Length: 216
Image 1 (cartoon, rainbow, N blue to C red):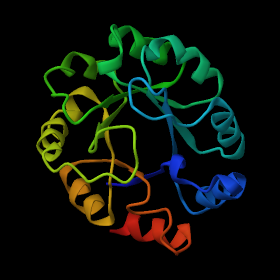
Image 2: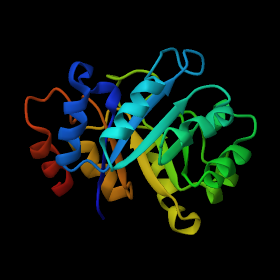
Image 3: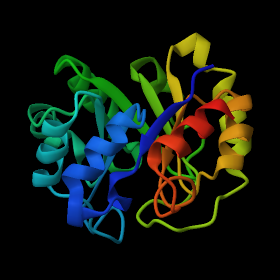
Image 4: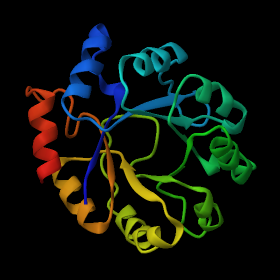
């Protein structure tokens, strides 16, 4: 199964964002992952609208936005108009997630569902028919540099057994190391959001790292 490499652009060097995007694009990245945080749903602030617009302009690859914000359904049209290809929302932050996922698809975008470590499969089962990409958080959302939460593996195994029935791809986000890519790929995970644990700040060029990760 092909591994989808998704650089977490919050970890990129914003002193030279244009060069970072172009280099990651040429290095074989599959999806550019953009974290949007409001300081309410998660205790941090993330990337801005100008960052989304800039990165969208610089690549023809898929761009996703991970809306770690309250009431994400109110902002679907905004991010769709900015050119996001995949829009992830958290059911924990949305009173009507089925409506929001339908709204994403109606806008011609791929519907992404992001679930926190403490969110069980049973609480989102009814949302799975509306989900194209299921992003399993393997750390508590909001900050880079956390430790991988091993108990989430059981949830990933459960979801992997359901993905054919519902037609979604499993993605993971949070402390994803090269070793975790090997382990989780074998469990049925398709895509990996990568930050400082596997991609950024490693002293190697992105092309070398991504090629090695895809072959692992």
